[in-house]
Amino acid sequence: MFFSANDLNHGTELWMYDGINDPILLYDINPGIKSSNPQKPTVYNNKLYFTTYIDSFGFELWNITFVMAY
Image 1 (cartoon, rainbow, N blue to C red):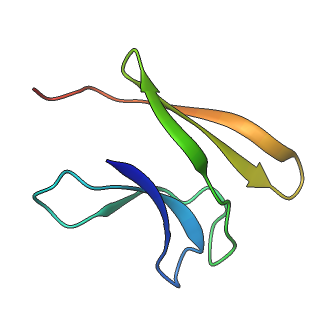
Image 2: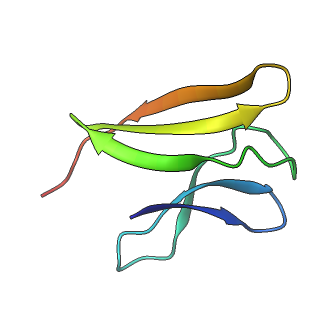
């Protein structure tokens, strides 16, 4: 499961939870406590797509490639 959360160290960023282990931060897009507010995480063809906000660019579409373990 992919979700946005704020841990007070990274701001609101993209996290992953596998249902077994503790949630992990996938990527700190705006380093530090500045939030990127990732939205609408969607998996397609082994890529995770989501929109996020970067101060200098505005809203952008991002993707992360990963290997699914079955």
